[in-house]
Amino acid sequence: MFAGKVTRRRMLRGAGVLMSLPLLESLRPLKGLGSEPETSNRAEKGSKHPIRFAALYMPNGVNAHHWTPKGDGANFELSSILEPLAPHKSDILVLTHLWNAATNTGDGHYVKTGGWLTSTTITRTTGNNLCAGNTSMDQLIAARHGNFTPVASLELGIEPPATGVDTNVGFTQLYGAHISWSTPTNPLPKEVHPKLAFDRLFRSNPSARKGGLGHDQSVLDLVAEDARRLQRELGGADRQKLNEYFESVRSVEKRIEFETRRQREQILVDPLARKEIERLGQKVDSFNPFRDPGKVSERGVTHTEHVRLMLDILTLAFWTDSTRVSTFMFGNAVSGRDFTFLDGVKGGFHENSHHQGDETKLEMYRRINRWHQEQFAYLLSRLKSIREGEGTLLDHSMILCGAGMRDGNSHNPENLPLILAGRGGGTISPGRHLTYARKTPMANLHLSLLQRTGVDMKKFADSTGPLPNLS
Image 1: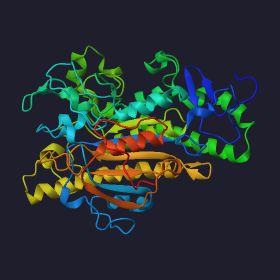
Image 2: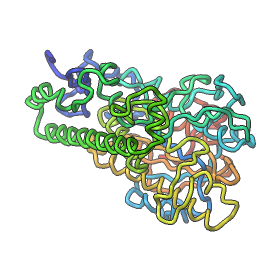
Image 3: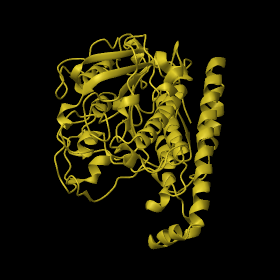
Image 4: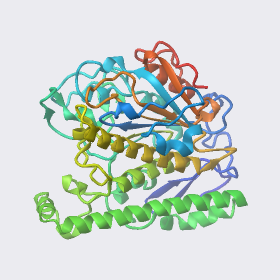
């Protein structure tokens, strides 16, 4: 299927499949064959590997009493919420005293969510005429690099958008489901189903993504012939790297298949779920919980596995340079996700975030926050395990994890809980707790990350300059 010399942008093809490859040393780019121009300014300051950016959003804030580390600089002690990040302490920056002034409007959640990556104030509306006031910083990076990758940006999440109006604050709930804005009035929808997110990366034929030819076959089986041909052209180290990649893809496929089957089995024995399927006009026996619409598809989900599947898909996307920009929402604004599956926790996330100083709720709140950091640590472990040149995929990434408010009870956008992981291709020096002057604009951080990805900007929203001391 391929003629002539190969390049690092080469892909494997099969029936309805277009499968990006990891960056392989044997497949060096040739001018005129998909390599980036010399002017790409990869943040690039001497890095021969692309810089990836991801933003992971946590709804409902954190238990502020157990977030901030003790000590500054390299001599800091992780707090109880951040303890799961201990294996990656040398890979993270904990940033203290940044805030988002534009979201300090008194609204509970929606302003903080919609403006997290824009550093602007959303327009109050009860309809679908949304306006965030700015293009989000992730999409400015995507505009800079999206032409070099099959997918300009990958928006992922767990919860589908809520509909209707939150009468407590007079905002449409749609604002709570989006952090990524391609224009001030165009929020990008996120994919919440692992199967559909996986297919977006690997299935080039839309009919295959909708149940057409080859939809029930492994993408590896469909590209097997092309893969065997490629293996003969690679050196030993690259063959091993490719095999590790194929094993990871197969693992994700199997887990998606297992979760789909398990969810379907649980749904089919649930009378209320069966009734909802029939209301949707579908046949119960052929219902696919990951593909078919309706809230019925949310039943039977193992939350931790769902999150980790999405994070594994994000890893595959970065590993193959399918995209260099991604966002992930652990939940929508005002997420009421039930965390009873955690020891010592009863009830939903939003309920416990409104603790009103109650020690029991505060402890449950802390445990939920800690669970989020366990998932963040899982992603960092995956990125760190993948070698890329003399470093790792994490070394060539910038992964931001945080929330749009400090404490879920007060909804305060001051001193936001923020962690930045990775080395940004050598432009960031992690392993420190950085404390800034109070009310330092979060937009300064956004500007610094934009500049590190080659986006030529001197100001972003209310920034006063690049955030110092990152490198």
